[in-house]
Length: 277
Image (cartoon, rainbow, N blue to C red):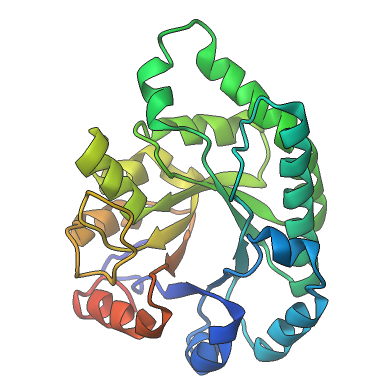
C-alpha cells in the first residue's frame, strides 16, 4: 500500500456487528471495502447456535468483494496463560472462531496480544521471561495456527497494553507461518504512549513493517481506550498514514469506533484530510 501521486489512496473498511450490515451494506459493496465482524468474540455466541446468524451474514454480504474478517475471542483469558486447563479453553474458543470463519468465508481473525504493562517492567527481572511467554503462547496456539493454515485464515495479533511494539512482531515471526501476522490498534497504542511511556502510534507501524496486515483506526486522548471517531482525540493521523504508506503488505484499514452509527463520520474526517478514500 502506498499513497504517492501515482497510486490511489488506501480504502477504508469498518468493524461492526452483523446487525449493522443492513445500514452499511451499500457502502461496503460499492466501495469494495474490507469488513470485520464483531459478533464472534463472545463465548455465549460461540457456544450457541450461530449458524442462523452466519446465514444472515452471507445473505447481507451477497455481492461483497472486500476482504472479510472477524474479531476473535479474548474475554476472560490470555493466549499466554500458564494454566493448562485455561489453555484448553483458549484453544477451544479459537477453534470455534475458525469454524465461523470457514462458514462465512472470513480470511482474517484478530487475536489479542498477551503482553501487559507488568511484563514490560519485568521481562529483564528474570532470565527467560520472554522466552517462557512465547512458549506459553505456542502451547495454546500451535494447533490453532495449523488449522488456520488449512482453512486459509490469518491470525493478526493486536496490541492491547503493549509498550514495546516489537514484542508482537517477534511473537508472530516465531510461528514461521504466513498465517500469523500483526495488527495495530491506533487508540491502544496512543493510550500506551500517553499513559505508560510507549512510543507514538507511527512507531508501532514502523516496528511492524510488512508483518502488519490489519489496523484498527480509532481516536483517543492518550489516557483511556476511547474508540472515538478520528478527529475527536489527539492521534497524529498524518504521521500514522505516512508510516503506512511505506508498506507493501496492504493492511486492512478498519474503522473501529464505539458508536457504529458514526462510521461515515470517521470516513469523512479521514477523507477530507486527504488520507484515504
